[in-house]
Length: 108
Image 1 (tube, one colour):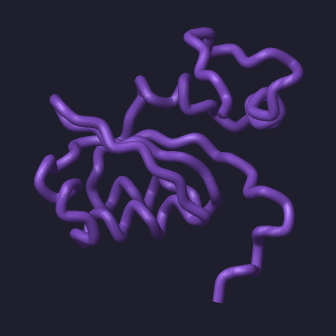
Image 2 (cartoon, helix red, strand yellow; image 1 turned 180 degrees about the horizontal axis):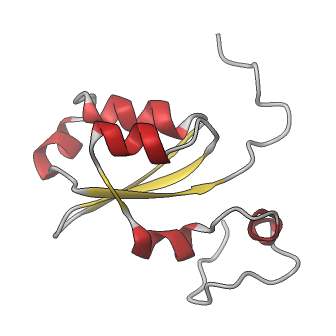
Image 3 (cartoon, helix red, strand yellow; image 1 turned 30 degrees about the horizontal axis):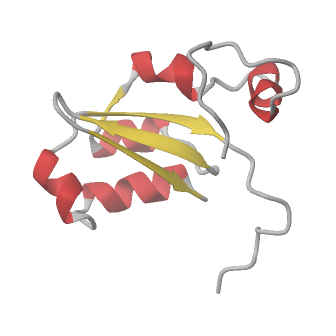
């Protein structure tokens, strides 16, 4: 299990450093510039890429992962998870993460 660091800048040996260096925003940097958790905002801001995401309300945080961030966030907006529907998150943030090799195309 990878230990989370309070340092927002990953070291050069960290895979997330490659994502940051390629111009993609890391979750640690993105979480403070959250997007509104509304359909229009998800469609505009969430990419159809794999990654991790956080849903936030004043008292609650949900963290998840998805092969397609946009599709997963839209599923949550449609009420697929009773806990998320109950806490009514107002914002989301995400970090793009490359899927493990050999995973693409394995779902039927």
